[in-house]
Image (tube, rainbow, N blue to C red; front, top):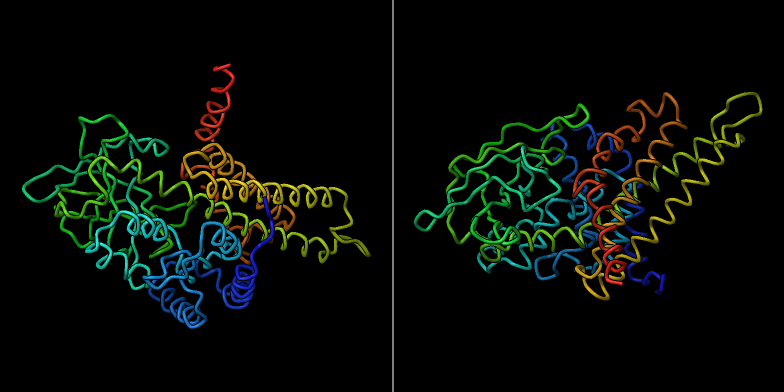
Length: 399
């Protein structure tokens, strides 16, 4: 492996890093604690226009639709930079769940679907949500769905109960995972269907409070009730029964971006930790950094971040070499390793900051509240560990 970052990628990252620290760090509180989305959106809209003028908009999205067209690992490095701020990915037009939806639309959408949904999504004129997780079904098993899409004439009629449809509040459409072919094998039962949010029967029940914060607009997680929602059959993405396969296409490479975003958060928390250690007086002539236990914390976090980062870079390299399917083990490993590294670094930074770390006067508690779910969403850590163990043991059993 060559760990050299291409010069073009390095320049892009440096430009973004300067913008994030100068323009977005001071605004982080409005993202993590936003309740007035209209005011937040207006303020962030100004920053988005600045990004577009700098020609840094939509780094990982197709050039033909106005993006920069960066490759997987190029965007991974970008994601690490943007992850330092809760607003980074949104302001640069590469935020989840829109980023994943754009990938699916670009790969599987018809020309009509691309014109109607993909183009304005890449341009940042609309937002979307991904509606897969269900209230009564295990979120880590996308083959278990109660939501159905039944054919009626030229339409599908959708019924189901979803939650954690992130950013549903204000989204123009959802990509809904629903069972269309119950007679098929479990991996070929579900499909993805485009559902405009103004369709009759699309009911946004609430923004789910996460760690006590319901959020608003983009910074929210919606509970949606689909009650006899009727959409044309031409709204299907890919083909019937291809929902699971498409979901894996969406989640595999996307996990590289998520993990690098988490490492961006780790980098910021670590930087804050070190500055607090050398600046906090605990006795005459004594700083926190003089304590051996603090030095041990800093050394451990530095090593954990470095190791996790190398794992992600290797996983991305393997995806580029042999494809996401052949890199399943590495993709699963980085998910739980980086998620736990994130939790450890944030917890240590909060502990080192003391009472200040528990307050909203720093970004740390906001990151903690929003990112504790890293060990749960996209499949709980335990599910990924079991998957990795099975792949390892399979070779031994064959012997």
